[in-house]
Length: 425
Image (tube, rainbow, N blue to C red; front, side, top):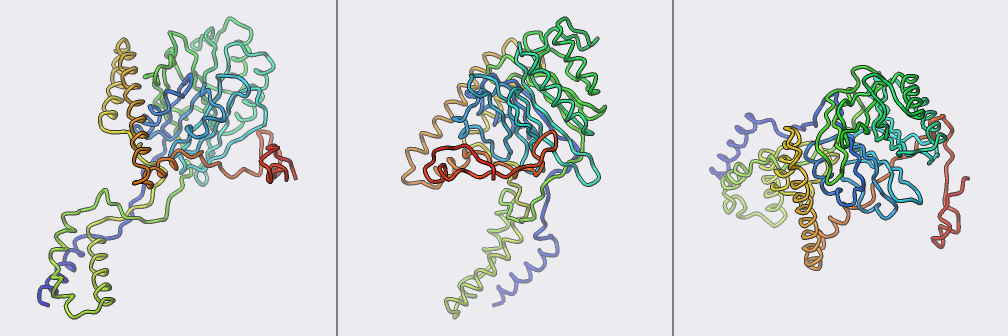
């Protein structure tokens, strides 16, 4: 009994030295870290993209030329991010996508016109702060004038917002952005639209074989900073653009507290367990009384040795196949581009892509081999590849502020799976 009292005194003394149950929050800043790339098909680049995004903790990821269709629903989702996408229908190529952290309050503005491949996402600002409009656009090399005019109309509507950032591949190699001049008629019309909407083009370096095709626009000075052109994604011939959006946006903060075992002091926990004379204190106690005493002591030790934190699922789970070797390979690839050693980048990209592909295939093979004995890991991996959840639709469903009309499946599609079109009420 004396040893038990000594343990109790030790607990009381240690508790005074340490604040228990403190819940720590996530990062607080006024910058959104963003990355843009023209992927030219993400089929063989999705794994490298996910690893890069997880390594750099980007808030927004914009992609053009995704080359996606319905069969990519399973592989397009990225844990910790909301996915917005517009695919080219009936033809190969094209398509745009935006990944936005799940902690942001955002919604898609859609006018229902698939003639142009543009995505417009409105991110809600904090109280008394302006919302931020983020757009991603892919303009093919030789579009017809009608498609351009539809884009100009959309741009005119969204540019009325207080803060607008637009990024994409516009295929305007003849435009001189230093002097705002162009050789072709369509390019001059594009420049007129940019000037009419008070947009500023912020990329000064070529992004594809000496040509400046990928552009970044903002309608307010100081809205975008840290613009850098650098490493390519996989074998894409377009270089990526990294930048930051300055603004205070509304972030979802979890109120759910959970144990942070990554920062647990297991040495302290073992020391606390060893200090309890278990045989002496449990002697003479019944099953229920002994269990209650044991549980109380263990929970007390847990509070002292394992800190609490908020449940921050928006950061996403670490990729199962990603290890330290791949982290270092990605870092070396970025350093080679930073210091201008572009001649050796292709060999490094080929080797890295092959390693990533083999690592993922080996992981899936291992999961399939042991699925009978370890079903939990198998289904956890499958669950992580589920289709991204969609947001609740806004009551205002267009760039022209048109009322949203609820839709329900037709009786035929509900009963038989046929007739997949949605009919208005």
